[in-house]
Amino acid sequence: MLISFEKRFLFVHVPKTGGTSMRAVLQKHADPQDSAVNRLLESVGISVNHFLGSYRSYRFRTHERLAVVNRRLPNPVFAELFKFGFVRDPWELLPSMYRFIRKTPHHKRHRAVSQMCFPTFIEFAIAKKLANQKRLIANSRGEILLDFVGKFERLEADFARVREKLGIRRGLPHLNGTKQKTVAAYYDSATVRRIQSAFADDIETFGYATEPTSSMPFAA
Image (cartoon, rainbow, N blue to C red; front, side):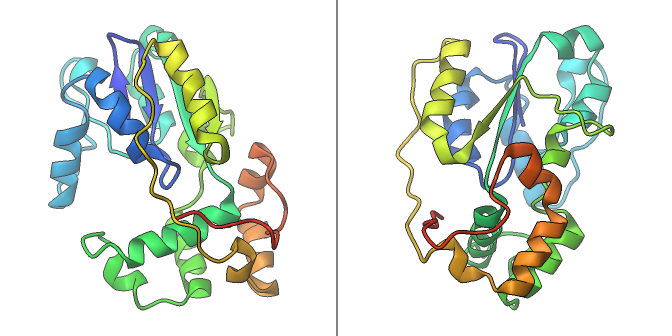
């Protein structure tokens, strides 16, 4: 999560939605205590979810839930921030997350996930709530708290709208996502039913298909 009280924006970083590329553009405009310190502390296992002093000194986790921020910031401050984030098709998000964790040795879940087949990872992700996107951007009543919800599938166009709103000229750095097998190749009938059940809210809320298609290319 990145916050700029000067530019009046709040970026919710939903995992595996192009957030790292967006952070590269937004970081210079964010408040200085936000990102680098949080990632360093989290990398050594120190929780940064603490709230001491003025609201400007609050440090939120990289993938903090927006409902937590809403509770901690004064209502007028939260209301005036332009709040935005991006979501991704759950059918593509799960394989992307699975591949990323397995190929990233320093990831805190690498050891466990590297031993898992994809169906086992799905159950793991469901149990740990790793891929539930709506919960990161909604309140306890299920109401979306963002002013703008972009989609990974149209990342450059949607982020251009964000940049225009914030008066930021720099575009996204080159994205290195590689095309792999189609998304449908990851699933069988059992895992399709599991995703349909576990991620029904995300699928309906963000307007995604109720099953993977054979023509859907997978971008890491």
